[in-house]
Image 1 (cartoon, one colour):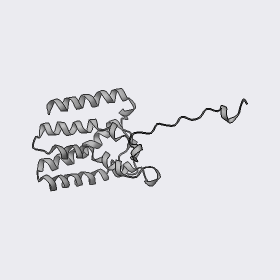
Image 2 (cartoon, rainbow, N blue to C red):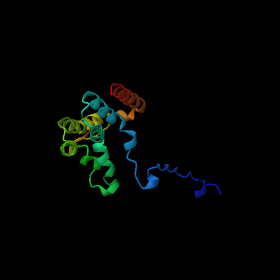
Image 3 (cartoon, rainbow, N blue to C red):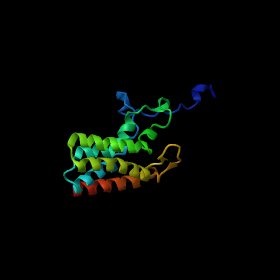
Image 4 (cartoon, rainbow, N blue to C red):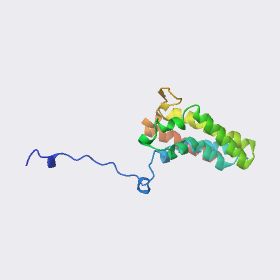
Amino acid sequence: MKGSAADLPTPRRRPRSRLASFGIHDNGLARVVTGHVSLAYAARARWPRAEFVALVVAAMLPDLADFVLPKGRACRTPCEMYTHAFPAVLVLTVAMAALAWGIWHRRVTALLAGAMVLLHVVFDFATGFKPFWFGGPSEGFSLYRFQAVDFAIESAMMTLAWVIL
């Protein structure tokens, strides 16, 4: 019978990610850490007494914090406002520096850990388009729209950081 509901195209379902099969919702974390990790590599190359683990965690801390926050309607405001916007990023900076100091008791590690959190937001300004303070407009260069350019830049950053380490 022509024109029946059976003739209508069915919408394609978006394939589930591997993380979703384990109950973990992928918010893009695995796709966006390369540039941030390259910062940790470069900092460690310049200051070899700094603890590398602290630098890597600090470089990714806003994304890690965003990853554990609830998604969708469970969050009253966009959850990244609690992890990537001022003054929340300043709280994460102080918390990471204090944690690094408490664990390793090295000034260079604590200072660089705080700097990595702040630099995370600076790099997100280049790659993303989001509000960076409460009530503010969305801003950024939105480099993620140009995936080939973003890939080239982040790959070059990671390669350079790996070479100098």
